[in-house]
Every structure is written in structure tokens, then in C-alpha cells.
Amino acid sequence: MVYHETQKFQYCAIHAVNALLGYAAFTVQDFEQVAKQLGKETGYVGQPYRSLLGLGDYDVNVIGRILQCKGLEIEWQDKRVTPQLERFHEPHIVGLLINVYIRRWWRFWGSSRHWSTIKLIQDKYYWLDSFNQSPIVWTEPCCVEHYLQQLLLQDGELLWIKQIEQDRSLHSCNRWV
Image (cartoon, rainbow, N blue to C red; front, top):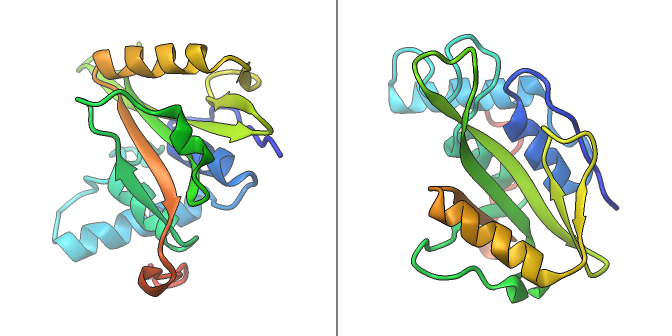
């Protein structure tokens, strides 16, 4: 099933993770709890894992911790290697999270990062980007390959999301506080 959320504030990480999982699995409160817990664990003053204003902009550490409670983990795509779409067919692969630089008019000090998802569902590739009103559907693998190659050239990050091996799975959603 295709699940898509549209952009609210800077909550693209939440939208991308929920799209990846196919339902509204996590809320702002979940991500905030994880960001605060990571801050406590690392001893940082302030909130290095989200925006200072508390409007989202969560980093990969928050996403990684969130995904662990669903038995999932992140595998970074090596930028020196062309992404192989065959990976989508591997039984342990759930999808692909994408992280790109974007410029926002209110961020006068520069740019920020934006999260989206690509999933393979019934032989169609769905780009689930909360900036779009609805999913973009690619039926031709060459379109997806071209898009991913362009992202890597523009300093984008590709993160394969896969199931954790049973003996390593943490499944610990309520341990954030």
C-alpha cells in the first residue's frame, strides 16, 4: 500500500519514515523524545539532533533510533558506487531514504536538508516526497537510476533501510525517556 504525507513545518523526516513504513507509525512527540534522549546521552547542550526552534529538521541519528524500534537499520549507499535497483528486490530491504540539500527562503544563513523515500510496490517505484501533493510513480527503472545518480552528484545521501537480523534487533520503542 502507498502511504504519503504532505509537508508540515520541517517534519520531512517523520513524513519520510511514515511513508517508508506505509502508515502513520510515528508522531512529532516520538521524534522529539528521541532527539532529547540523544542529547542527554551525548551530553550536548541544546538540541543538535533537531532544529533549535523545535519545528523538526531531525538528523539521521534520530531516524536511526526511531527505525530500530521497528526492527530496522540504516545502510549507507557508498557514493563511489552506482546504486543497484536490484536491492529493492532483496527480501530484507524495506526501501530507500533520501537526504538532499535544499535552500529555504527563511534560512538566511544557508540551506538545510530534506528527507524523502523511494519504495518499490508491485513493480512500480514510488517517490514519496512530502513536498509533493501526491507520490511520483516511475514504471521504468532507468528513470529511478538517473534520479539517484543525479542526487549523488549533488551531494545527496542514499540510505537503504533494511530489517535487522533477529538476534541483533532492539525492538525498544518505549525506552526513549
